Image (spheres, one colour):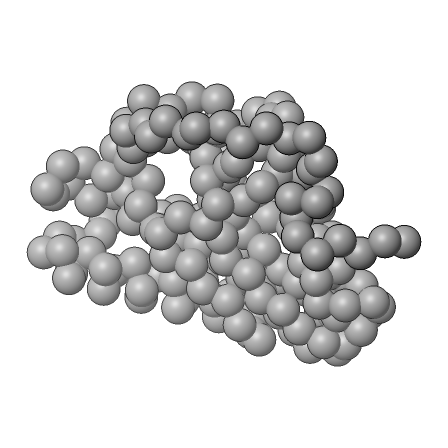
Length: 182
């Protein structure tokens, strides 16, 4: 196998194109997924397996900070997105080794000011999903307080696993539908 010195060498004949800047956009739909992956090869393989288990192993994930626009709506099922699509994601991820308990999760709460939107907190650790839910609940409540609001309702999604192979990974992700942006 030949190892090339630059990525451009792999894409021989690919013309350089002038890229026109576009204005920022906001996602209007999203879904929530979770996945568990294990591997005896590497942490990266366990992470890849968790992405595949969560149904997003074929996407190019762009990690977003923790805000969902107020006009975005959740989907029951994931959208069929072509492989390689750039896909905005809010991701909670925990890695671990054999016999460790790993968990990850997200909490979502509605915020009214300055305009309606949703905040998301991610957490992960070597704890049970139940313990992680408590951390997420306190985190999202404090996030509301910092914004001068009381969080009265929140949605929490977690996943946990005791790792049986050499490496393990647990993910929970909010995946923005890349086919519908304002």
